[in-house]
Image (cartoon, rainbow over all chains, first blue to last red; front, side, top):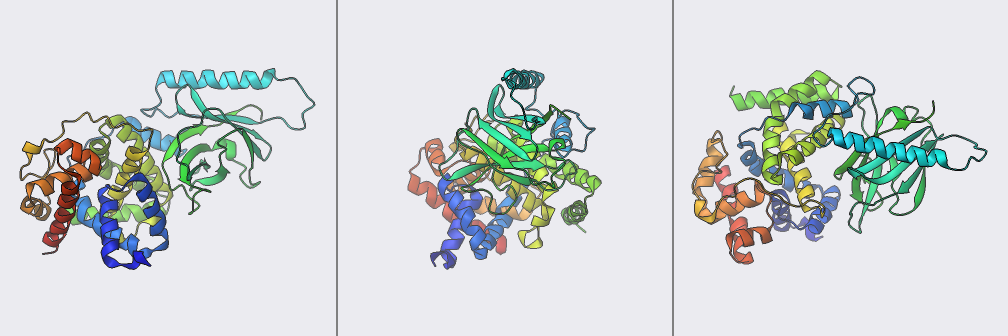
Length: 229
Length: 182
């Protein structure tokens, strides 16, 4: 196997750590690292050589809102308290609220059919303000997801939906999000506190995270809006 | 015990406590390390607001997965820097993110022994080894590692052939590795 060649491993690790690999090569290399532990070791070696250079930069104190946003996302703030992160301006929240009201209105305006079960909660997943990417509706142990405006993604990637438990435990995968149309996801019955939890979407390799935890960038987080008890 | 070693030990103790669910330890680690991580992300992404968003993601990951760290990866700070840099580079390379550097880029004529204009020189060995590199090697390593530039971007920035850029980085990194080991 070529990747067992020490010189090649060293070259690849060096370019991965310094950041000069192309996006495609970078994704491939990440997958290879999972299979070949010596590649992982080579990367750790170069990180220990180069990272101290970054450590020498003069610190920049984060805005206090960053810590507040982190604790809000971990569910440590009082229930229902809104994150005040830098990406959520007042106008952003107003836009989100308007968006939710519109979705709720459309849902309520639909012809009344004898419902077997009423939706209990809605979530609008948006990457950019005023532009929902997906709308999720929870009915019983089923999530109905519809695509609104799909963010950019590479052909060999998927979007994965995660539940962020309010108690701060690790994210739990709820499944892959559709790239067109609608999709139904089943929620395990034991996830009773789903609507009290946050939601997140990450970009993952094709067919989802290989580790059971988010491995790619988190492109958005969202909260549920409860419709019925 | 040196200040650096003491910091490493503290961060390791906090990480152990975080794996037991200690929010206090998580806050201590954040207060101790977030300034450095934000400096790294701001340099890479060129925007403090974007850097603060990535900073949030990094600490959320740390809270959920503290057990991912182990001593083969170096100090806790080395591990945190790797998470932060990887997240930033993935963002930079993502098609939706447009680089908008707001800081002043170092010019080719600005190559001097100092590692970078915004740097402290607290790591004497590293500083010494960087000084020993050829100017073009040091400069291309800085542009790639600290500013997140691709080979092509460095080629445009320095108006030098791609082959030369690759060669400067490759030889510079090997020289740096040899010097740090000596």
